[in-house]
Length: 215
Image 1 (cartoon, rainbow, N blue to C red):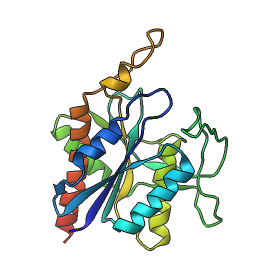
Image 2: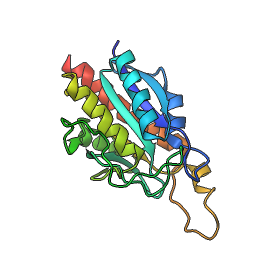
Image 3: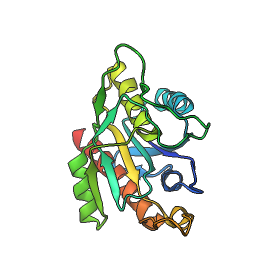
């Protein structure tokens, strides 16, 4: 049974929790269609995240890759359409570093951007059918989330595996993140962690069922 690699991120910045880590842990080992979910946690630092991601891709040779992370402030789950070859951080990463106008991948053969190869419209339709609020986003930001989407797509493309469905899913805050916002700041929109995990599961099921249909 082929693997569906599902990644989340550790907590970062002022957020004491990360709903992507919780969703990935909850779904590890789940069978979706013709695939089995293999979950992993990535550090919020681009170079170590890239190294960890490469090792996971090499080890598991996944039939699909679903990368997830927190976008605090967004009211719904969002599928990212594009990753740019740029790092420009508004906040430090977990190593304390901030990058400005830096490439996500410095090799000469690295293109300016990669498009998601996930079935975006199929996933969006599945969310709406399940009563989950979601949309397609045209910017993954320029933080570590964008970096890992770009890195994964580049790794697969360089190895002749550009047909492997791969992309990024941003998640809203869960209650633990939302309640940690200081009282003098605007409250964050959030969804219950169970709904966030359900959204990731539905997206994974679309990938698993699509793989079964292609066979």
